[in-house]
Length: 178
Image (tube, rainbow, N blue to C red; front, top):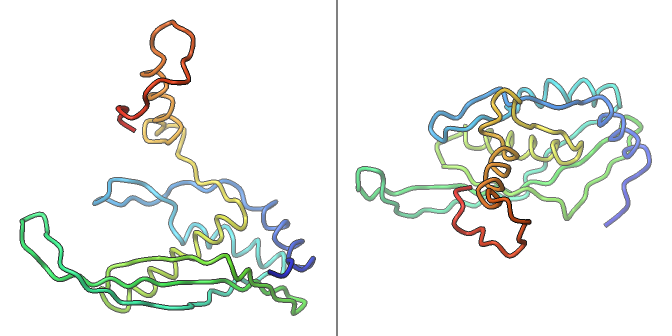
């Protein structure tokens, strides 16, 4: 792997300095969870990238279709199709310098529902790449602390160490409702 060029490294640091924490602004009703939409990522990151002279270009490396049978909630066996995409990303600096980390790939599997599957996969891969490249936090809203990972872990710890005895590092964690 080649080292990240200094122009790109400087631009990445500049973006990191200007993009703050993003809130979970969308809700998946079926999965009952909140998440930060790709639009929120783009709204926060695009101006910062522009200011830093940085372009992120998604590169689709492969798309593999798989077909299988699965039982739905009504007990009916249905044929399902999924596509697994593999992405890499090229960083392009306004100076013309480019860089790709060949080992940093994203795999995304989506239901094969048509053209939207391609866009959904690319959006998700791009969002996850930006999140990791720029170290963007997307923690829960403090007012909705019951759903946060930290709150779940804290509640689990209270269950384990509820007695007034010293913490026992050998306590069994397997029965906890994480």
